[in-house]
Image (cartoon, rainbow, N blue to C red; front, top):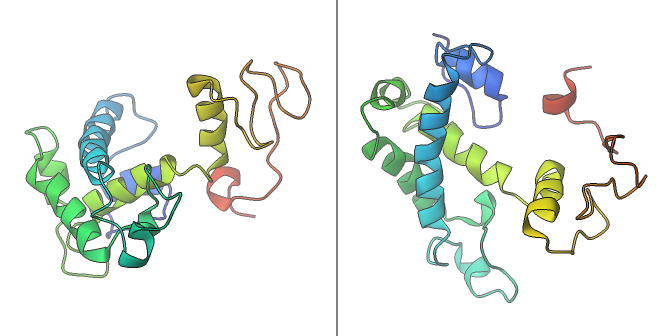
Length: 175
């Protein structure tokens, strides 16, 4: 196992630091179990606005899903610890590896997972705009991602993937 990693590292780096291999199909169920437990806490944190920062709580138009940076730091810590407290027999040993008093404390494993769930549901994330447009049939894609028919909003061709208009080191690798 490597040293603890921060919440913004890739899934591969996270899994490696935990002593797992992201490309090993036997490790995928462990990752999914950990993520499912983080999703349960994420869902709870999005049920009301009491976890929000005071200046965000009563802002018109702010509603779930909430952004990580809109959650009060004490509630972020609560979520990190709550995932650990609720751990099942499969995930408990993995979560226990994350206990730390260091920079990424109190638990870097559950912290990474919770931040990852918030980030994956962030509407500013291009991959999720495409998924939400296709799955929710909302019809409001703000000119981004794909339209409801699964066709690229820019080309109209189902087989041609939409290219990203920006460089993302996590998705595109280091330059």
